[in-house]
Image 1 (tube, chains in turn red, cyan):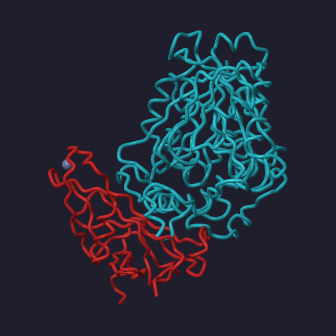
Image 2: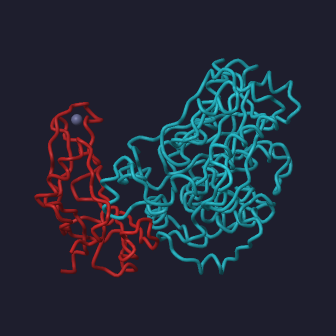
Image 3: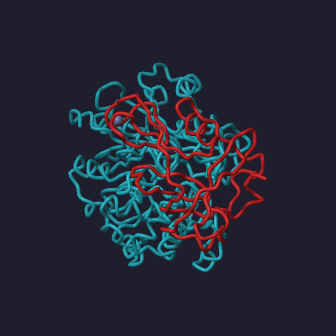
Length: 142
Length: 391
Ligand SMILES: [Zn+2]
């Protein structure tokens, strides 16, 4: 069973975002970097803002992340999330990957225990049709 | 800023009735907007046929060329819209109008916004086509309150900002709205107890930290100093206007939160604030009253810091000391009730209140107010602000 019901909006990537989601199909969380100067960027863009190269290299993110900030959502702005209220949306950073943050969910924890600075670990949510969405749970829990 | 005779002045303001979300059913959003434009032009003492430019923002669906035909504007010499969603472009629409006026591309520009959310897109809900939506929607980050809440969360983590300080923004807005008969929440008092008993929307934002959802339209008429002088209406000078977006913001909080760490807990206005005060030849201490875009209480606190009314992390103490209150505060803010308690017209209602203050017509009038800062939507790309001066 996916974390959110099936009616949840799914990724609908534009052209240069597709490789991010293709990697997710293989359960790899990869950020885009410039193949020439190494600058990381997220969300994906077609041109390096630093050296303007269009050569791209995808870099694996570590499995663990840190909660940079978060919100506990209590109001259903889409019918699909009604059964999951309250849920946590975290803004996550990864060691060694300066300049990129990932929006994802922090799951498997009472919402009042989520803290900035908390370490979380990736799990892959099977949303069907071969697509996976990365979500995170506290490192301590299984 | 252009030759002195072409210095842009606001000469007229107009607004529809403001109602709760879905409250305007008898007329279309387009009609309500057209009516607000007509009333602004009449307030200015001009004729609709004097209009030769329109500006707006936020993908306004009240298309200028159609407005031209609907109102019988003979020649449209200028029409432009600011990129970017929500209210972030409100002051940008004034910037565009100023550019047109100063450069002689137009003589009478109306900046407008019509927003009957019962008839069209409802900004507080999931909406289909946001850039970078693939990186937020699958996680349930759908609406602006949810998108901006993490900034406030981090802000409260890094600095001594307390829930009471967020409350003060909401309570101030309501107290001001209670004096404003046109405010949607005009007749409803709000106590601190009610504030803290209200439900969470997206922590750390409670119900009363979030702007209203209303129906309404508002318009502002801008012309040259030379033209303004000949009108009977009381004009207000636009001392400075600036808009734009900081390094690396992109979709910012409305996308995947990849702004630089140094500006993460900010309104995306620090450069704009510097430019604005320099252009106006003023400092924050010279500002008598401010209308700060209050979609969410926490961002108003950040704006007090970004625009230099207090130091970094000091906005909590600043509001706690009563500085934003009418009357007597050092910097009364959102004197019409703002978007938390007057109406949510993507910030154009805040501009109108700025004009009322400098005309001496506010229901929470700051004595001898000579300058007013008005901001665009905060924490968005673009953002911006204007400084109005009594002329
Ligand atoms: Zn590069």
